[in-house]
Length: 307
Image 1 (cartoon, rainbow, N blue to C red):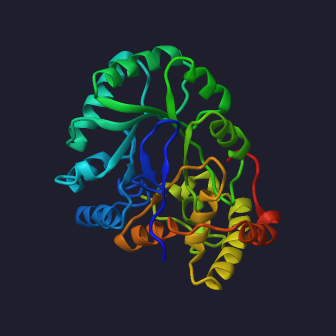
Image 2 (cartoon, rainbow, N blue to C red):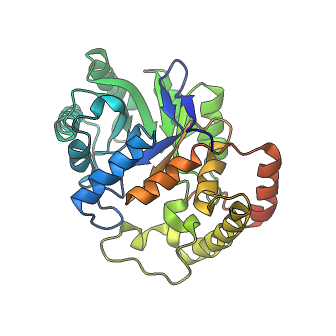
């Protein structure tokens, strides 16, 4: 098996692995986890070559757990977090200082604006972030859940290194906007939820009920009509992948990585085994013929409207 692939994140950006460890699950977003399990999962991911890690101010205990897991390993990873709260100057200062303190680090590699907030002018928000970039507190500026127009406006103020859109073989609305836009403008794309919050693993069927502490319990991605389509896609992926000595989960991730313009896929993990499976997907380069075969199997079940 080939080794984990690396790609450049945006024009003149850093080289990062095509798999990024997403830490929403590690922070308790899909159920509270034992801290030792969290640390072991992070270490397993890093040891497998997944040295790109993404978190956020709003990811529950994620930053705190990462701070513990990265002690003695901070220099091995490219660390990304996000400004999730309001965009006031006071909150930006507080959020960034808190992230650095909690993550037990001196700087953030990629600091991202979690969502567009029209209450604050993006020009003012970015002007403030540029101050922190110039003093070395952050290295690169990124955005998450921004449209192509919002990215264009942002890019007139500061160099936007990357964007995070929701994207998978099931939920495809982000392909034309913003993924194609980012590709045309040299902006890195880090897609999140490539396995549709677990729906494409084949574990979940119609009527499944998540525990009370799992935030997927009320998520719109698990609406009846989406689960029905997701189950069909998951079954097709699993069947096709098995014939190639792989899992459906690996195939779902590899498919997103085959999309032109996509730099990396953010893959959540709740235990070391899941972290290793995610890493394995990062060595799978699908051919055009294979992609055409897969498209024939799943095209009728895909969702091209925002979710």
